[in-house]
Amino acid sequence: MIVKTIKYKKVEEVPVWGKSHQMTLLIYKETSKFPKGEIYGITSQLRRAASSVTANITEGFYKGSAKQLLQFLFNARGSLGEVMYFLRLSKDLGYLSLSNYNMLDKICSSVGKQLNGWIKSLKLK
Image (tube, rainbow, N blue to C red; front, side, top):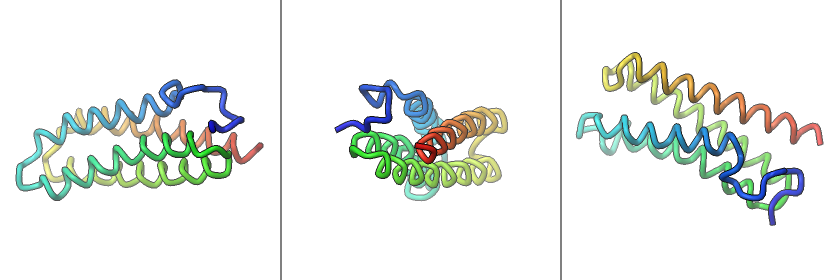
């Protein structure tokens, strides 16, 4: 059952879902250029954290209550923090160019603002 407080019928219609999915696709593309020695390190961690943002939004959307959705949005926000750290680490290690880091950081900020807005709106209901 979809949460009644949501005006969307499918999770793909939710703007933050689309933005976080875009972020994940870009992170997969960028990490494919990382050193092969990082396949089980930063590459894996960054990909898992990025996909976890969208996966948590999806799971919360379909849980059936605003309370459960809120918990999964908090989880998504935590995973987003992890993504932001690994992007910074990747930049500092020279695996990610400054321009690509800035582009991804901007997307992360947008996802964070959208998550915070949705969390705030659910807390008010």
